[in-house]
Length: 111
Ligand SMILES: [Zn+2]
Image 1: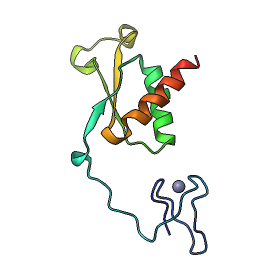
Image 2: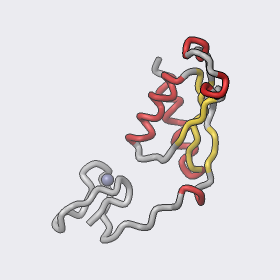
Image 3: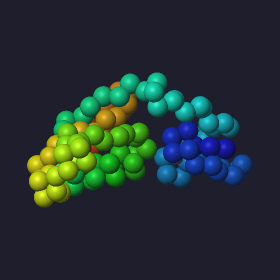
């Protein structure tokens, strides 16, 4: 038995995921290939520290994501000190956009 959300495998007798509190399934659905996902950009974050915080939360929520910085550091060969204020954009699948945007709002709102 597997959890369809976090993909944890459970022994036969378990019917519900301990973490997600949802019914388990016999077999996992096939994962959507990366290229098939419709990625959308979230509000750019001011700095990599925020981006790392957000990535951690997205990871905990099992939301696929990737980040893109607007600085091509290797190309320009600039030191990290110059990167303060650099914007980092996080991409998530379209179906997770609202959820992710809300998470980020809550995360950054607390500060
Ligand atoms: Zn689960």
